[in-house]
Length: 449
Image (cartoon, rainbow, N blue to C red; front, side, top):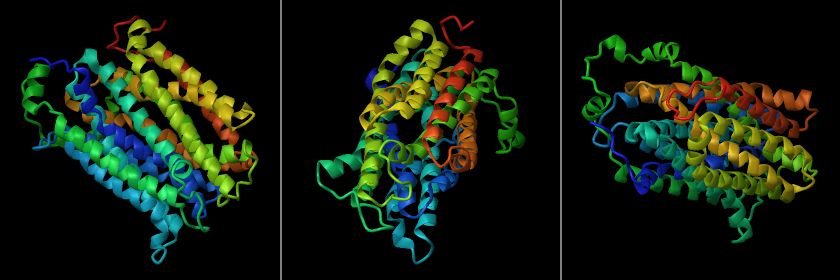
């Protein structure tokens, strides 16, 4: 038995839930730092509040992957997990900008940080089963297309999420300022809309996608189902799987480390960096209308790089087929690194759009190429757990950046967060250099020598 090839729209529906996930994720990435500053966080403390997000991912992802490999319900294997994650993430989106409602119990800043943790843990619950679902359902020759379509949907969702606060303010006249300690109405409504879109898009995938049953997967993979011992089925077996991870996965881990170290620095520090370096504002002026305008412009910029990623993702399968997945990924990371570094030299906020073009190219490749390379090296039975373990190399660099990023801004960069973005660019360039060391066992193009 072989996996059947899906047509484009079947692949589209397979990943459609990622549109909603990424819309919520984009709202978080573009606005969480601004919201935490409104609730009283200092700039050099921001990365510490963000640390809860990757830390929960470090714990949640492999556990979800382990159990999703062993789950079969009326909804299938992966779908129960990303549906649960979507519901929890939607609640986090609603509560984060409304954290000041709970000040009778604890400070709004801590409530906001707590909901940030819940949101990111929930996004993690939803994301990796989606990655595993693509690898489960699609044959090898359609995986690059599958992850590229996923990247397209991620880009579309992120554009909507990133631009929504700006659109509500500038097109519909909804206020983007509020009393000190209160999140503007435009942000509140944006997060509520994001929660609704997240649930609806996930349900589209749940009701339009069929998963292969465990018996069908056994026939596809050409082996009989063996009875697992308690030891083999144990959650603790994750540590054994980590120790025995495929060589390709080990090599990709370093590429992922530097890619996501750079991304985390960009997400945390872009708003204060642009407000200070480009708009010339004080970092203590987070409540002013000009600072909020800078924050809205960051949303537009994040939308631009996500729009670019959605367009570039259309071309990724053809480029990868022509030159190989490794060369495609290395080239994309180099362009992204140059884009990040160029933000330091931008003479005004409009020039930053050019920087976003490069970042969007890198973002598209980061979301697709590593997973397309990885999927061919993973045992089919362990697709979920290894996709979860692979997340270690996404969250560990974020945790490290969260711990050192704030102190580096305060003590090493003289309080100027623009240098955090330059370091992120350098990190992308290091990742690009490390791609040449990866053994892509499933690529049809000769590897980089």
